[in-house]
Image: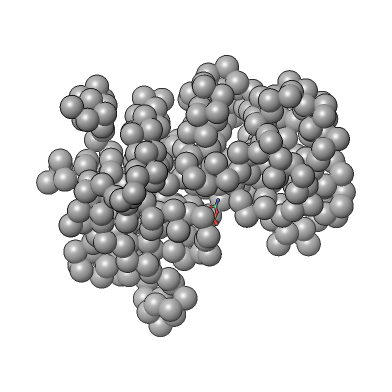
Length: 320
Ligand code: CP
């Protein structure tokens, strides 16, 4: 019996959509990570394909720019033998005023089986899930959630550290506006990690405490006690709105460099969702250093997204 069939016998996955980690149970998150484990070797084979989604069609419906997520979903669908349609809002009839729902319904009418959506509006995937019958996968909705990024982050932590339960994980940067932070917080706390969110007071509101995290405005104070550090991208577009005095000031207080690494645990795992601003949230020396898992995260994104596409399709087929 295959590893995936054994997993399916132990846990019955019934969710047709992956909209966020807030609504997922610990068991559901673990089942996605365990299913992803069964897909890791596909990328190392001479023929990098399995027939799990043969005859199915996956559409990437991206209304925001993306390098990692879009490519990773495309490749994941292709490795599952699905046909992939790349939709770009910039060259679509959205420019003629067509709505999101009409766009999705028209795509569904062509016989698409899974819609992967990235949109700047928080809740856009949830809205679509109520309007179409096919599975919806959230590839990032505004500042709300980025569930597959958090899943691949957790997959990477578990792969390298051997566990998540009991680890201290710092998430550093613009927590208030970060979908990566929110999804990581939901997921990591459910899997038993202690999460510390770190950043300037303007970007780390005290209301975040309600999510079950600790708050710090001083990276140097927590540096020595953490096992994992996830450095969020500095969203330069926000600098003009006075959230911190200058990029230099931010880097001095919250940037990760060799000097700070020397004061951290020797095996501190350094993560970043990308795209990196080298020299701002972390130096090149750290980004490319021995503790960095940044490219490993990208590699693992493929197996995680294969698992997600596989599971939502399976739930949809089972419900029809
Ligand atoms: N981490 C992430 O979402 O990267 P992209 O914006 O390139 O997809």
